[in-house]
Length: 426
Image (cartoon, rainbow, N blue to C red; front, side, top):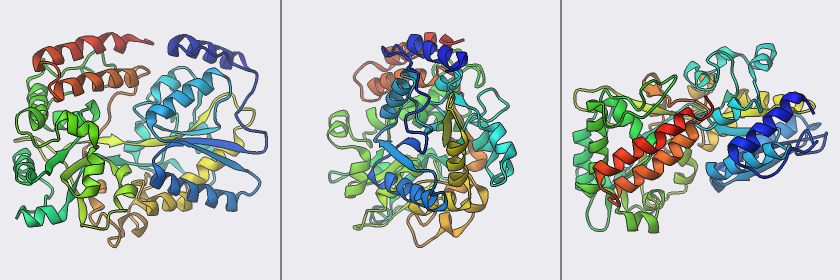
């Protein structure tokens, strides 16, 4: 085991408070195969199983063990434990908002040199916006992003039609959105389902000309209350629940998630990324589609980047098999497999603009919405501590959103409590 690997493990033990030590093992599987760890529900994982099957056919000499978990939180726990124990997976799929803490500890093998020397894929094949989110040092790629998704509005076409509401289109406004939500909130239904979190709030702040943090590259604090444009967007977002009642209240959201309500046809609009599509394709009782996020009055279109990337663990005895898997996954065949499953907006531009993704016979009919959002996508910070800032911030924002604590006190607590986290690891 290298001294770099020992130092990385020791640092993780201290920073992440994991009580296990690093072992002498270089990888979690035997020398003949690789382990791939990722997250997703049953419908999503089905697409990854197809991907692995395709890779196995093309590379029968490299057995693959797919080891999925249900949520990103479970994935983070799995990775933290496996890195600290010296038995990391060969390949893992991680969101750009969460990879920073691992990149900062040096436990990810940067992919830039592998991509530069690849005869199968080239950097120019992929969306620059997605690639940039995984340049931890601002220059070289740390991981290779498989998708270029955005936050969109999923809407129940049948409910819109029955209520006489025009289908949402590019350029619709916050007022249009709210009017539709109010019209749809009746007879046990609600107009909107949205997770009260910083990633869901951010595009509304940006659309209104505000900022989420003081410096996107080297953030020191959130700017939700001291920036007037940011604060106006925060209040508009919070008012969806507290003032207008178009979002399910706390107790009802706890008993049934917004996604479950949308699946049942009792929710008019649902805000999520492309990740929801495989599950929503199980709907047979009504028609649904996607629309861009509404634009602030006098503001500009904005959405938030949702991108996951394949990363390789540092310290492996041989990165060759892991890279061959990533090459396949990011090649034409691999990207088409996941695009056809509905799971991803391919970062490979040729596939994103092909029928594999844009097939109008498969829901959502308006998949072009995801591609049209590309010029307006922004990313949250990729610092080593951002995942902790987001986790703590999400928890406090939910408290305010559902009225568990006073708005002014809650927002003040939110900014004060997360501020020290920005300096962790600096």
